Length: 204
Image (spheres, rainbow, N blue to C red):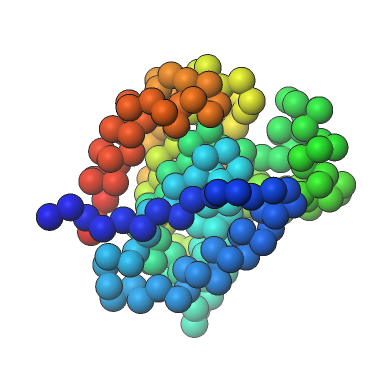
């Protein structure tokens, strides 16, 4: 029997609609009945969608308290897959300055401090000082994929985010050998096989 996986994906989002998308996902996950394993989703995001899934997974960890632990949200996430994601807005601004006015500032305003608060890599790094706070949290497994041919997002975004996740004990796999441009990678059968392999390896 094939595992049932619910895929949350970004469709016709227009900036600054990313905030509304994140809010919708944030409201959706707690509504899942974690007793029903078929409703525990694998979050899959590409580009800005990977940014959203990263924030969502880390938020559920960061909000854990003695009375609201991993069972509230984190346990409802089975795994996370990020494909050519944007994980640090500050790094993106340094590497691609032309992205600042038409993308970063339109979605996240002009304050770089706000960019860091909205960046999965920086959020993960900030959690290093709170390891005791997340010690009892079961973190979802992660797969990060980045094509060496990506012309829109540099591979350091993925490598640096992987290192940040590993620093807070997230089980991370990194795949950087699937070819394709930023969008064309989604058409590559090798990507589809890699996603299926990772999802099949998760506990259902």
